[in-house]
Amino acid sequence: MMDTTLENPAAIRHALRTTQRRRTARALILIGPLALFLLIIFVIPIASLLTRAIDNPEVIQTLPRTLQALQGWDHAAPVPPAAYRALSDDLGKAKNSRAVGELARRLNYEISGYRSLIFKTARKAPLHADTDAAARDALIALDKRWDEPRYWQAIAGNDHAWSSYYLLASLDLRVDSHGDIVSIPPDVSAFRAIFTRTFVISLVVTLVCLVLGYPLAYWITRLSKRKANLVLICILIPFWTSVLVRIAAWVVLLQREGLINSGLMHLGIISEPLPLLFNRLGVYIAMVHILLPFMVLPLYSVMQSVPPSYQRAAISLGSHPFAAFWRVYVPQTYPGVAAGSLLVFIIAIGYYITPALLGGASDQMISYYVAYFTNQTINWGMASALGLLLLAGTLLLYALYRRISGKELALS
Figure (cartoon, rainbow, N blue to C red):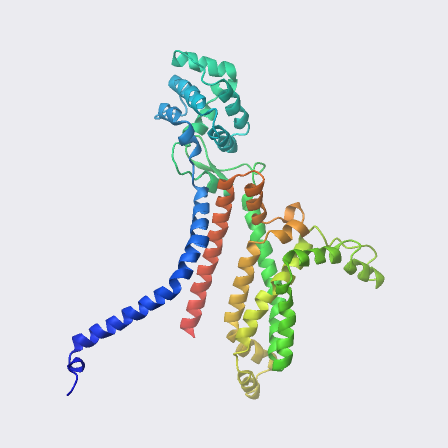
């Protein structure tokens, strides 16, 4: 007897959907623990950290009455007298908590010296003034800076739980008293120059790795399998050594009395030691040494799949060997070039240890300042803003790579 299911298209579709749902459920069960682990350990902490770039709770939580008194205040007009009394009450209420310190640190980012002003006022608060005018006179008598509108503008400008202050400061921008976004004076901050320096160093390191890694990967593909495996093991040896150990080794090699300078002077090539350490050259040398395997391995994996018969066929048809190599072989290795360059560049822009130990003050990359704001000034907002911009630049480069590689696959 023939199965009626085979004669019913609807039943066949239902059975196929049921089978597909079961396969999807099994796949979700298998990857579920890993996805949950990555979500809890990786995604959520990074997302919560990056939100600190726009998080702005200090003024709202510590000075609610002051912000209410400043609502509708025209920054060009005199400060409302009620704001003085509200500020005295707010600081008097929060004087014995850590909120005063966080408020002082936050406002000090905008106006240097605000920290001492807040602590000085909080020690005397509340002033027990009977009227708003009396509170105003008492605060100005305590410190004349309270008679300057810019200190009140800094408070009034932080009346939202989210602020673009850190993101703008990361780009050397700020909001002026009129609400316009303007550039910070060059002598105050230079984050745009630091970002430019970071990308320039990463680009130079990537190009040098490509120049050195391409012929090395091509040479490995021409070796026998046994010799190729031996060379690959030698290339992978740096992965088994700590980055700090490798940097310490470069310090020994590059210093004025190091092996390189001593060897060059012994050969008579130079008459005095070359400055190879604590400058940009030392950073380039160490970063290229560390990142070169990340260029060689993608190139080798792609070159290994290119049939050598294509190049020989072009030569047999009358092409010059170099022309055959350049026009036939090299285009087939573009995916490896793109993958290796992207990998090296993305890793390079996040480097911190190598420039910090081998470079000078003008060679530090943006990661150094992320660590500086995190560990020394405890400015999590600024550190998160710099990290967010760096992440955005990385994702933009990756999206550009995907777009270019997609077009290349479509054309091929």
